Length: 399
Image (cartoon, rainbow, N blue to C red; front, side):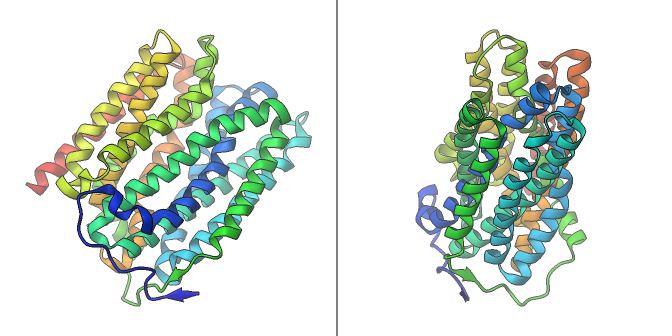
């Protein structure tokens, strides 16, 4: 059932909690969706490396492959959200999430046939790109209709909390399931979690899309290109922690590699809860400038860490800085697009993250082969410094 609006826009407020209750149902959809995807996140690199016997380059290619499909997924999700409504786009993403778990399960019998198993894993990762694109693009656009454009930063803030909350909870859960039930248990858990989310979201009330003419997608990309460049550069650290943290801890003889992903998610959530109101209040670019510098410090700390606790602290700083950088650059992007094209603007903006997430893992694998796994975090720290330069440019243009 659709309606012209799911809720009246909220009055202006500097508190991030103003938007919490109107966004809560959408946050649950995002949390459970990314919980399902997060269950497999620390497990797939180990399965490729330890069970299928592949090196870091192949691990990077498998983990990064989802971002090939994400680019097309963002375009499709934005278009479907703007033309048919965000509810339909969200349900499409959740159907794809069920397919991810089924595809993971299909690769279990092929442990002795690495090529077949790798092909199925890549297929699952490609479908993961579609899943994540549709879930987050649709729910952010849906949330923006619920609370109004004055709270765009809070939409990014709360949806990001739900997203990384799902990843943070999924990583240790996936590790525990893998230890007890193997990869098949992980695949079944992904499928069941996604199916439950699909059923729950199907009962939510939708919103009627705008009938105003939409901007062509290439024009939307042009509108958001500068904030998007900042997102690309600050996303490298997120990509490196997600793809290589487990292997880095193993190489250094430490336990708790999956906890690096958890600490990154916790840092992301803490940053959003403590400072998520600031982009709407003082400007997205200004917040992004300082926060990606914090991210750079965190990534450098992982590179130099003499003990796992230092690496966990670095992951938390990296997650907190990245989360607010994403929010700040995202606010700059969405406010550059007309209301009827904001779904496409959100999709276009996150494509710039996909570029980083698609290229960084395989390039990081090559760098790890020549300079060691620690070097990928130093390179990511320099990427975050580049994002700070983009944010400074946006601040100057706004002055």
